[in-house]
Length: 323
Image (cartoon, rainbow, N blue to C red; front, side, top):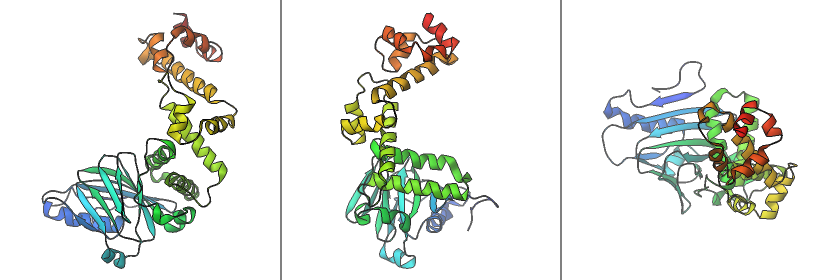
């Protein structure tokens, strides 16, 4: 097939841009069939069709990045008969406005959200405008056994901005950034953890180890704090709501680290402030500006809490605070 990977490279690559316009969309159909699964494709208008797919394996999980034009993708009984589906596709758009439909449900996805569809049954994917997307191919025998109701987990939007969905979305994007360089053993281990994370974000699971669940919830809470260090009103109640746990359980998550929620949040704010104080690029920033950037509305209070190990770490910081 034209446009595939270089000899010796673990990445397969297909692009339509080098072809004549009349060949571009027919070639794109071949690409989707080979890289993913047999489907029926349609597009709103004739003319040039830009499409680019890069695909590789991480252990048993297929990973692909896609950039293409507006189109509709349908997996019908005819295509299922041509090749049985034994994978779930996890689609994570990097642009807004796509959707996935299966079993009477429709997931409308924004950038960073994700949903799964099951290649064993009919589904429909809609891309009303040019789009970029990450797609994972998760074998049935990895994901289905850990879901209470696999048939109810498809075409359900998992929000990529909060809770476990945010952790799973970030993990998927990190997997793509890592590329195909992982060795086989590391790839298999990572695939297993990723599948557990995806399963937990989709809802009830059959066998989620409690320790794994707690670790993922703690990571989600820490990420929520990291994203809001500049908010002076950041509170346990706010973070607990974003992660989807009670305030008391949130405190237990942090207590397990040996550092309370308040202690961990203060340490992250001070550490980030220290880096800015040491950064020559921000030399023109005042202490008050940096304090406000990380949720300290009172510069004097910021200076007081900063003294101690943070102040001793850097002469540059000490000079800024004395000034």
